[in-house]
Length: 365
Image 1 (cartoon, rainbow, N blue to C red):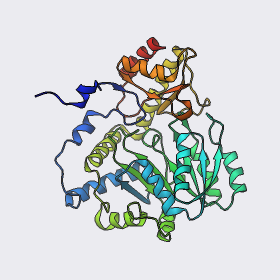
Image 2 (spheres, one colour):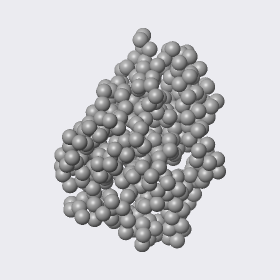
Image 3 (cartoon, rainbow, N blue to C red):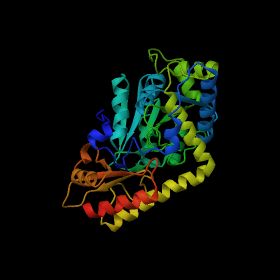
Image 4 (cartoon, helix red, strand yellow):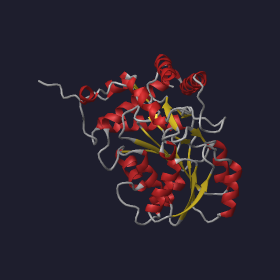
């Protein structure tokens, strides 16, 4: 019989340095290779509680953590529909901050924007000034790790400002959670969400979010928030049935539970240190090849590097050249598609793989 594998037909046997989906550890993939069972069974209830407990510990959060059968963008819309009646502030220093604005406006919310110069971080000073100018906003959205430009915003400092102004705080942590420390309770984050296919190194299809009691109280009093992403419905099913009100992606839930178990074995601090060391290794290799990073120095992401293309090449040409050598990077995003390319070090990326990738990159540029 003719092999119809999409991998064979399309030659998709690349070493992944993408920004999601990413390469998965063999133990994670093995965990997904289990026969299915009912999402209303005792076995699933036990799995659900175990994973939720692990996420609560990982995020240092003692309120609510929910599992969503969606990508992170689903939770982004959830935060708006459940917690904002009229107006919110969207902080924007890249394409995914812009997405929050787009999602909010599409749901009939008035959006005030705080935009930084491209490549620059959001600072506590400018956020405080903006909130003084816009005291009627109900919530603030911040992108922790702006995937489009490889920039890490100082969330611990920014959260202090938002809390001082007594606003709800929504955090898009899609490419940050699992790759950098988040203290959701201590920092007063009201909705902080991420997707399985980024730093956790699990196939796509599952999102997770910490949700504060303040956010749930706001949700309880909201009208026309829909059914699928109703936070109070999530809370009800979580408390009564240890599950979700619709069928969850059980293979991804098994995989994420295994991944967090693996992180526990090495320790959370060492896990984050490994991310920092891999990111530093990538940056040093880029410097050796005469390449520079796009974001402001000191705010570089530990999970994705946005790289300025060399003068004689476009970012797309670098991307294509690396594909020819068997490495899948990521193209520049949006307006930066020509002038940059991106290298992710999320998921199952070893030092040996990084060395091979950097060697190939040196040849290409």
